[in-house]
Length: 168
Image (cartoon, rainbow, N blue to C red; front, side, top):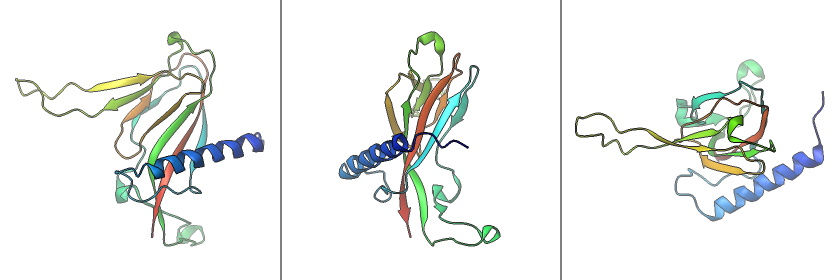
């Protein structure tokens, strides 16, 4: 099994840690704890033509999104009495030559004010479509930003990641 270019992967982790440092210095009001430089989660995603990812939020609703570190008793029992939670989600687009006809935009839903109209109907949901332009970085809160990947009409590649906080 190929693990890709180790040097490139290490450079990506270095850049993700630098982003973590910048956001920690900004003292994010929504972060439950400082972002952990060495608990960054990364994944490479490749979407074939026709590929998409349904609407979701990156933090599971159970346990407030806090997940225990280690393994359950069934898997050897190495829980470490600490928990991690995704705080900031990010994407780095890799596919060059994107055009509007290629599709595959990231749709980010914006919170509605819930005011509705004079007939009592709920407020119209709004969103922003972010084109997957190579080299672009997109960051958003993991715990409350609904998002999805719209159907792509050509091969689409990106790196996704999560900056996480830890608690004991």
